[in-house]
Image 1 (cartoon, rainbow, N blue to C red):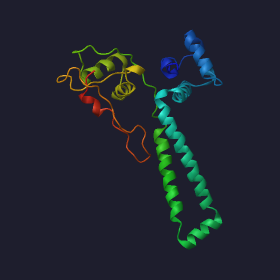
Image 2: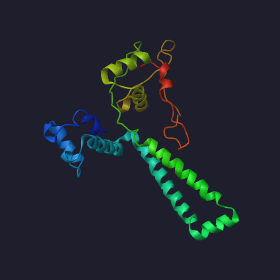
Image 3: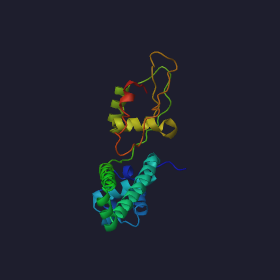
Image 4: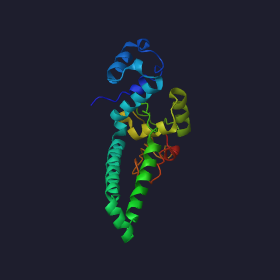
Length: 217
């Protein structure tokens, strides 16, 4: 399988330029990958939005999230259909007489929560930069603050991106993190373990940054 090559990151410095100004390789990608959309007919922000949508559909890092949202919208469709069925005039009147209208209120509440979840998630995706890193030389490790500072100066990396690179691991162009480098030789490798990746609409997002603060790279 070919390694994911983000179109958004490739065009990061070119969204406000005419198609003819792009280097040949990028001009070809912009024309072919965005088809049937045409570069010259889109505003710069529309170009960025289009590449983000394309990246999201092809980025291996979003596979589980895409599965989550597939199930999410399938469930939402089912709830809306059930609400419509319960909202029919005959059924609604019967519910009022029997005092069983709570089911409709519960479904409406679930749909409202899902609408909020959907709205909050719309602007969250951005492709992660991949940082190929060789295995560390034994005895030479870099503490988290220094490693983050180096990556921030070199690539403009964020703590969340560093966490993503550790999640990918070196086999996918990411990073290996270690624990207890001052006590054990070789030190054990850090793993995120069973932290949830994509929770239910009522769960808080998992904290992937804090566990790394005691790691070495």
